[in-house]
Amino acid sequence: MNEPPRLPFGAASPPRAPSRQVVTVSALTTQIRTVLESTYDEVWVEGELSNTRLWKTGHLYFSLRDDQAQLKAVMFRSAVRYLRFKPEDGLKVIARGRVTVYEPKGEYQIVCEHLQPHGQGALQVAFDQLKRQLESDGLFAADRKRPLPLLPRQIGVVTSLDGAAIRDILTVLTRRHPTAHVLIHPVRVQGEGAAAQVARGISLLSRTPGVDVIIAGRGGGSLEDLWAFNEESVARAIADATVPVISAVGHETDVTLSDMVADVRAPTPSAAAEIVVAGREELVNRIDQLSRAMRGSVIDRLGRRRTRLLELTRRPGMAAWPARLAGRGRHTAELTHALTNAGRAIPSSLERRLHAVRSRLDACEPGRRLEASRTRVVTAHERLRAATAQRRQALASRVGDVAGRLDALSPLGVLSRGYSLCWNDDRTAILRDADQVSLGDGVAVKLRRGELTCRVIGKK
Amino acid sequence: MEEHITDFESAIGELETIVKTLEGGDLSLEQSLALYERGVQLSRFCHTRLEDAERRIELLNDRGERTPAPDALTQALDDGDNA
Image 1 (tube, each protein chain N blue to C red):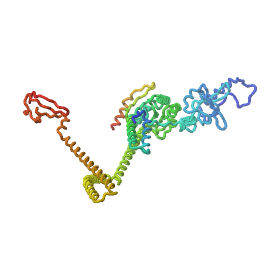
Image 2: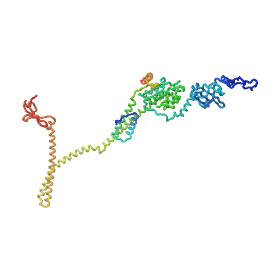
Image 3: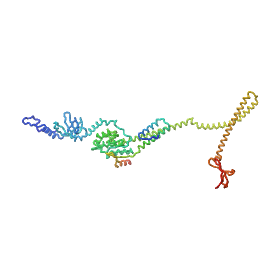
Image 4: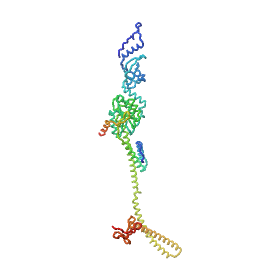
């Protein structure tokens, strides 16, 4: 690189006694330091990190080495602060710094102003490092993923009010969920302090009563732009949230650590909103489906019953009934008629038989058969009387029937409905005209029960 | 059958049970009609729950206080609705 500096003393030449110059260790060390610092005041060194230790003071101590050599290195807190990745052993880096001497130990070392991973961007390294860390902490585990609520009462959103993300989210939510209740915590999503704000917003919304799900995200951008969602604080806030978190960062190709920790990863903010409302739509469909199934089943049941009823009424046993009833009616009438005739016939036929018996009796000699014949005669008599009585009774009941009907027609029946009959004094006529009586005449008024004797005191 | 319906989840659960019973069970007509009535009641409840709210968009500040979202945000949505 540089031409080797000329040293102020002849280190390469053999010491010469007379002209020898003795210096103190400090003086020499200071001289060496001066030489090194002025010569190597800004160098770029490529090597692998080893013995890396971050002290409590915030300073970072390590060595840079390659196959054959190693170089002690320190990075002070003021520079460490700006590191985007965590320096760890084995990492190939390029360091920028100045070479100096640590006088108390007589060691030269490089004081690094800047470190960057060799071969890949610092952000990428930082990403990989944190990813490994979160993974070993179990934050990506599938069994940590919580199911989203089907019907979130309030939907928390952590994003910027300025970007397209919030509009995309609100547009979808309003279109597909007419009764959505959205609670937005506005944050910066990129630049200084963005990660802290996003992390805080997530934990704030997660603790807000009524919020059942949180969308955290932003629109697409460069790896730098999305960086807040790769920060440990945001990843941890998502993991610690008490309600499910949907991460919605950038476009489909950008996968952030937030995405990996989140319960659900949505490729875009709009997609996150769609995922949130999908539960509600699923519910609506399920209820509709259940209602339909229920109605279908009941209608089906009714239909089966109706069919069965129809079948039953068409079965021969049932279908014949009306005809059979009609037949019975006719049959009954015929039987009644026959019975009546029989009833009438009985007495005359009995009488005829009685006569016959008598004439046979008369013709017979009195003897053994007399007694038997008498018995038969008596029996015949009895039967005759019984038949006659029966017939008489039937007639009597018919008469009663007619009387009943007559009664219904009787004017006396009318009285029971509240009308009354008015007779003249000597009961020769029922009064139908006021002219039939004079003032002062007596009249008799017959009511349903009892009678009134009245005097006419006026006429109209 | 006039049991009170307390929450959405149990309403849906009961509705599912009813449908299952209706589809599988060997019920009398009266029983199935009673179940059906209850089912209709439940599904109405669910629908009401789903529709019975107004859209609300609010901001939450660092102190946990809520304010209505700025018109600029909701205005755009309403325009979108009309479009």
